Length: 546
Ligand SMILES: Nc1nc2c(c(=O)[nH]1)N[C@H]1C(S)=C(S)[C@@H](COP(=O)(O)O)O[C@H]1N2
Ligand SMILES: [Mo]
Image 1 (cartoon, helix red, strand yellow):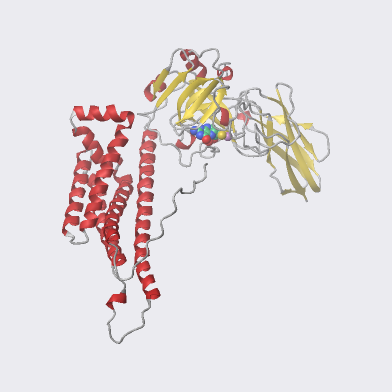
Image 2: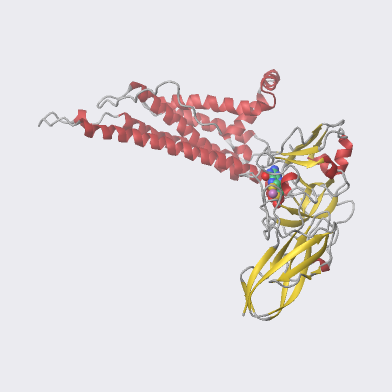
């Protein structure tokens, strides 16, 4: 981020506050600001109320929508020609600017009389309410946000106008009776004037903050509500092959649940607030170095044959022994089939997935086309993807860390080359390639536990997605590595559970675990940090037997 450049021109000296004389410029500016702030607070309040009464009951959106519906076609075409896909934003901005001008004028008018401002507020309230009531399927409640906005505008304008008047009022110095003569004490007069100004500025600041919080918060909540409803209405297609049943033998006693529920599934992303995507307007564009670019709508995606697969997702930031890993049943379209359809050019060695919020990840084209169950997923454990986990669609690729494969809220798949594009985490110090490293974790006993002597179950999970685990070994203190019992593996793409018995003897002990994958590679004991491509090392727990 660049530093703020010093201003090239010397700062103008602060205007001297002249006691006893109101500045004519400020006298106009403050009421205008009061008008603006009152309108902003009112619109914010309306957005908040519209969370309950429905998005199109927001006076701002309703008026904009009304304009769109009633404006003559040539004007609409002109708008689209000038602003392109930003025509809606331009319309709302225009509406806001017009309202701002009126609000400033009404604020100024309020200095003289309340007649005009009250008339203006009533007028705008009526327009907002009428526009909201004309929206499709609007009930009478659609008028509520506008009515609330009207009341809030009047109250806020009144408060701020009073503060503006106070700020402009000459200090008591001039009001003092001339007799008995008093010594002139201008320093005492200054705080009086500054106090009024300060109170006015605080009022404006509070109003601005309130309007921002309620406006932005209301919009976000409205969007969340709409998308939550859209998600609830989704009917997932059945998979073309039935979803595999979890063999009862997959669960080892004492290990974490073999299937991670949607509620318990770890969440990692850069989104401060998850993108709220409406499936009815969602599109997935597959383009770049391809012969046949393709754009899919939600309906088109759902009509494609889908498969259901258990895949264990892992985060590259998972520390040894950490819980940034989860196993779910994903329902989706094989990415390989989509790629076959668009026909990537031979040089396109990277598939960049882009999220609605601009986040990107890059996966090797060869990996996505090697026949593994890389999915463009829409379902997670039998439900549409939760919003936090990428609704309406995301990628899931067995064997690759999430940061190079598992794009949530996906809207774009672009075929390119690793030499030409660095995805989000690459310039931030993470490897462009992120195959999951063979790892294992002890779930029971917990680190620091105290147990009784005698038979003790040690259990946990091990994973080497798309290679599979062949062996898990446990070591107590400096003893020999002994092979644990592996629970039934469901596929090479999921974690496998293991357990081991140990005759615990009194004292302080350390238990370690290590796994070996089908390549014959045993995970190294050497500890390396999570950056740049995943931690290594053996997970260990210390426990006391007494
Ligand atoms: N849009 C988007 N997708 C994303 C990320 C992100 O920051 N933004 N993070 C990735 C990372 S680092 C991981 S580990 C997985 C986590 O998926 P989950 O939150 O569903 O567990 O999502 C991946 N997909
Ligand atoms: Mo991650």
